[in-house]
Every structure is written in structure tokens, then in C-alpha cells.
Length: 117
Image (tube, rainbow, N blue to C red; front, side, top):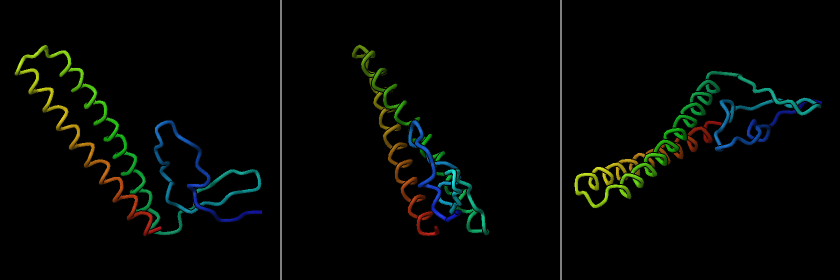
């Protein structure tokens, strides 16, 4: 028995919660539980592009978190030096702005792809 479901129900869990490239596509599931994404038109190509962009934005958010941690280490080890302290604050501020942009853009992409889907 083959029936159509959404690929999100077929996808396994990822370590960092990254979506798969076929996250927004419809898929077919066979009797053994294997999922196969179905590309049926041009709008499905845009859904794949949206999923890839969402993956890249999540990688950018992860990089921003790493830079926040790195800025905190720089701030802690600056030993009160005004120059090093201001560079560390700048690193943290820029990373927070980047994290905010990445999260906002991923939310917008997810909303748009969900409405196309």
C-alpha cells in the first residue's frame, strides 16, 4: 500500500536539527517504511531551494553562536586591556546581530516555504 505523506514525517532526527533537502516536498511511503520524495513541478524546485537556504542559515546561526563563545573567551582573557576588551565586545555584538539575522531569515524562509507547500 502506497500513500502520500509529507517528508517531514519521514525524516529522521538530525544532531543539530537541520532539515533535509526534501523537507518541504511531498513523499511516498511504501509498506516497508521507506520514504521517497516526489518532485512534481517547478514549485517543488523552489521548495528544495528554500530547504537548502534554511540549512545554510542554520549553519550561519551555529557559526554565530561559536563567535559569541569566542568573544566571551576573548573578553575573559583580556585582563582589563581596553583595546582587547573593545575588540571582544565588538565580536560579541557582531555575532549577536548575525545570529538575530540568521534566525529571522530562517523563520521567514520556513514561513514562505510552508505557505507554498
